[in-house]
Image (cartoon, rainbow, N blue to C red; front, top):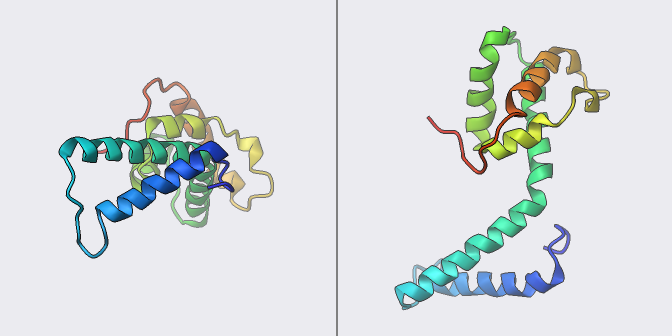
Amino acid sequence: MFLLGIEKQYIKEYKDIITYRNKLLHASGAIMKNTLRDFNTQIKKIIKCLDHISSKTEDETCYWLYLQFLNSYGKSDIILDENEYENYIIDNFIKKYYLSLSDMKKISKIEYSQFVGFVYKKKFKPLVKFINKKYSKIKQHRCIIVE
């Protein structure tokens, strides 16, 4: 957690949450007897912990997934027309990696000029430009696109 940039004051708290979770829902199938209120309180702590950890890594993860997507398209024999970009992006990127609209807004800020030295740069240029234009205007947050 320290390497991810989690602040020291949270590390012990998060370790305790994981220890509690391991006791609560043990791999052996043993489940601690707790009240529903205690269980819900702990679940909320776990979700808060995971949100905090993911906020430290989501930018890097989005960038890495974007590179995977662009390189995959670049290597493929697929040649898309501009009217096919949106469906291709939704099916092969957003749905595949369960990206939110907030993730897509972050990704849309990655400029084409940042891809210096990429082998398939010329092929994916129109796709990058499309993403930059389409997803930069998103106002909704934390909503996963599903069909």
